Image 1 (cartoon, helix red, strand yellow):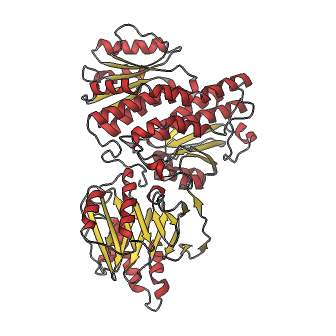
Image 2 (cartoon, one colour):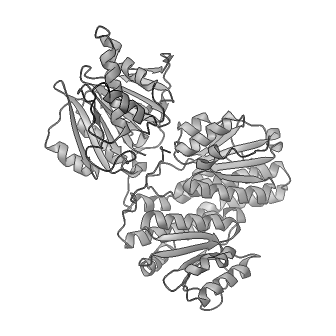
Image 3 (cartoon, one colour):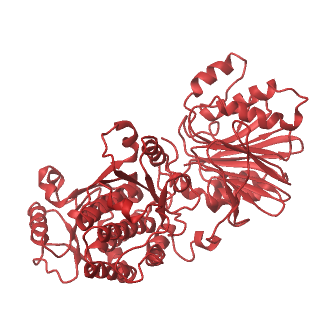
Length: 616
């Protein structure tokens, strides 16, 4: 959730660190700080609030050092204060550290260190970690100068319970940084005579595209000339240098007011990228190159289990509907945060899927590890190449949606829906779906990008509707079958970025309690597709209208609503059932976005939220 940026090389570090922190603002944070090695000192600046406050502070200080570490903090242990902001300096002034993650045994370690006369200025678990490194550094023989710094970090981490991504500097070792990770992402950017550390590739992409993804339990010792990776048990690790394929332009606004707006309008391209190369030559089924299971293995699967968190959990619910509807295989959907603690009985031949845009969501990663520990094969649907979930899965499907900067997921979500539809087709054709039905399904999927473009043409109309509803404080989202998860997603989007209380329900469940909320000040958003449930949904709408509730109807073209039933109508194109959730998502994304803008909310950085949740 927090962000780390480090630099060591020939250039002034401060400008590079600040640029990187600005690129990490989308992850969510409440304070920022940096430390520069300069003139034999560790110079530290920290500020609560936005990175811009830190920029103003450091401009007065004229830092010239060429090695430094920096951080954006999302508060866990301790409030939002300058004292709790990172970096943290050890009480002896020898070491400075930035940290993402949670140290679970920090209280016991702090008690131990207080008995050794170490003092603490903050409420954080991170300062405890920094002082423990200082304790081990003091115990290392001074004659062991070359490895004393690295070994003090290594010995400290052997005592740590919890998660961490850290970068550390030592006053006695100028032009050196030691970094390590366990459960929190960290990568090394390899430049020309310089190296960068970051928790996210977007922080270093303007300087290099060559990166090394650190694995759990690995440490990297970096100097301006070289770097070396070792494990906690001192084994050398040959580095694998990967190349980032997207460009810095992908992470720029390019004329849009917000990243969320840009990413909503990037969805046709993201869907095209998700489909590219994934259809069979005869156009009747889907192909995947990374599942690492033969077709015969998939025919033996008795049940699929999908696990995720947040928006991605809604994608799992759509996957459940599509797989059961078309492939006739039972699907169970679980919150990743609950799965590892429930100890649920599972089918012997179940196959697990874990969905995560970032590939670093800690609850999803922990659930995946639990499934592997129980002997199950695990698959990932992920957007970030080289992420922890992508690396640790037995197989999977990359989304290829490009970087998603807005905290509220848009193009990543619809990309997940499309991949779920592709996978449902793949399994269905292995079971009992006919060739002609497969061809029809494929044609439906291929139409998705153009139908999303057509839906996006409704943006001015939806903006006008948003202006009329921005003052309300409650909202219901109601849909059935595959559109019930989209009702949940619509409610989540509105909550996330506009801070309006919203709930999503199956439309028929409305009368079993939620209808008590309905009044003139609580509008309802209905998904009204054509088909066998059309009349049932209309009946639910009439129950709302009878209680003076306002209705915004998202209606498939060709459906005729009774006169006066809906206060607002947003038409969407008629389409194949498999892509209906994708098409229906776009209007609620736009509605939430325009309402948030009308309420003057910080759309890309909503309060209390982070893009990638890397702490439990």
